[in-house]
Image 1 (cartoon, rainbow, N blue to C red):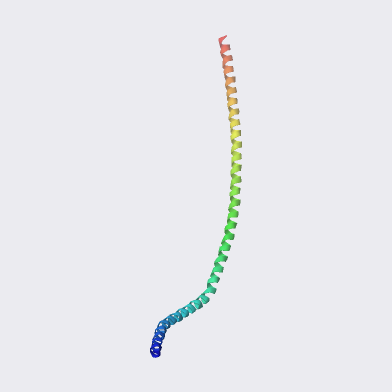
Image 2: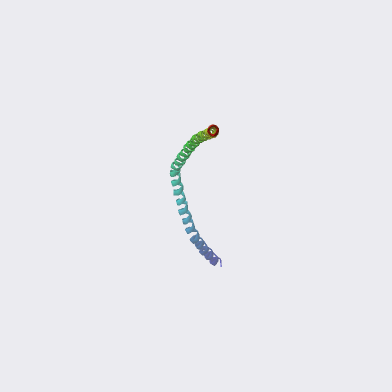
Length: 129
């Protein structure tokens, strides 16, 4: 009976080893692949970090240039606004002076008409005498 138990244990051990060995082999392959991957990452990482730093520097420079451009555009827009305000003021002055000039011209014409009517009336009275 002990012999049967020993044979059963031996068979069980062989079956267990039969299942464990492929698993150990797969774990070893996976570990080898992970080691290769880590080695590749270690070799590529410095270059990637260098590129990230360069990209960061480029973005920083472009941001500074954009801020400078926005500042210049702001100054330009303020100057354009000032020119527009000046043009508006000149337009208002010219409009007021044009209105005053038209009133003066109309007043002179009305006066000349009154003088002409007066002279005409006097001439008619002299002829009618």
